Image (cartoon, rainbow, N blue to C red; front, top):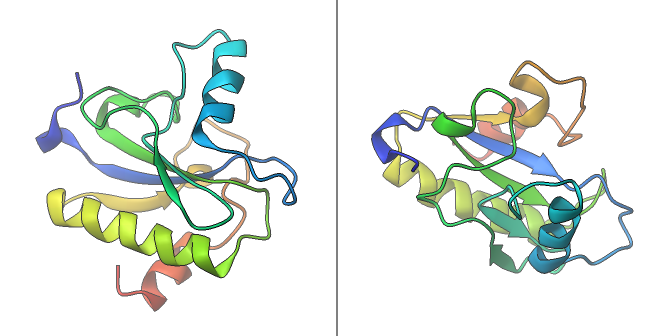
Length: 134
């Protein structure tokens, strides 16, 4: 079980799927099951339309960042590197709500977590957060 007071990171991911594919949380769930996981690894999915869908409940340890799942929450933008304005608006909303619950947590991109060669989420999270006062 994920202990709320232990949350150190709010991790932004991308699905690394074609930007034209409008996948949903159920699609990611099936993809992760095919990886042999226990289902969707992210806590929130942000669709191309900007709709936010639930993944794993926020009290379950995620499967989204090696070595840090027990101290993080993960949100995934659908797409690879050309996210919509609506996705970014929703991302800001999700992160602000999480920061209200976990003010000590640091917002990072998956690529900043160590133990990965991924470039996910394929945008500069630090500068984006600075622009949004996050």
